[in-house]
Amino acid sequence: MNARSHDGALRGDLNLQVGTQAHGTARTAVASARPPGRERLIVVEDDPVTRTMLVDYFSDNNFDVVGAGTCTECRQALRARTDLVFLDVQLPDGDGFELAKEIQATSNAGIIFVTRRDTDVDRILGLEVAGDHYVTKPINLRDLLARARSVLRRRSIDRKAARNHNSIAFGDWIIDLTRRELLGNDGKPVALTRAEFDLLAALVGADGRPLSRDYLIEVVSNRQAEVDIRTVDALVARLRRKLVGSGTPVIATVTGVGYKLALSERL
Image (tube, rainbow, N blue to C red; front, side, top):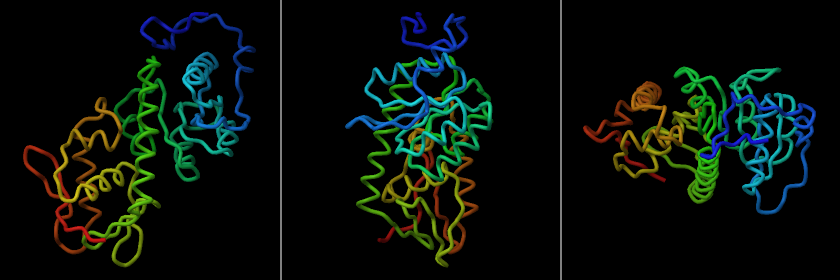
């Protein structure tokens, strides 16, 4: 079976002649002992050919991989500690976006959507809901591997930073990097989407230095393609509406560069 092209891409619409029974038994969503030093990955994909190829490829690249064909199987696999989830949007027993919200609420795992749904609305929704990346099929395996490693590396850095500097106060607000919460001066949480929180955390952590829109695209979506500057501008506009209180603008526009935090930070 030759499912990988010479450039390392997995072409989902190839007519691969593979017995479904063999695919169904390749690796199931039964949690197993985690090999030491290997990150655990769940591949949530209802197509058995695509699922098996992803499982095999990432296993060959030193991941501890579990395949899941449904939302139910994914939930079972999540009972064990998980570092990263590849998540299809269309699943036989549920919606991938809703499942991503569950994963985000119950796990610290990164999420990369891997799907055929390629509209701008779907991409933005996926990234705002929970996704670190939004990858459309056909899949380039080497590109997906690079994205997976990037997500895991960034999350490791974030965890170390959070342990060293958990909460930062600025203006009338306190941002808690460990609990991923923003609190007002009344102690009440301010509802932020994942993308809004990541963008604000980057600005707060920049010590008043301006951050370019291109850099903020990377912060929000961990990619520099398929999400444009307008997405960052829209997120900043929404944050400005939510961060009102002292009357002083929280996020300032730096002409020709991007944005910066306009308030002095304090520990």
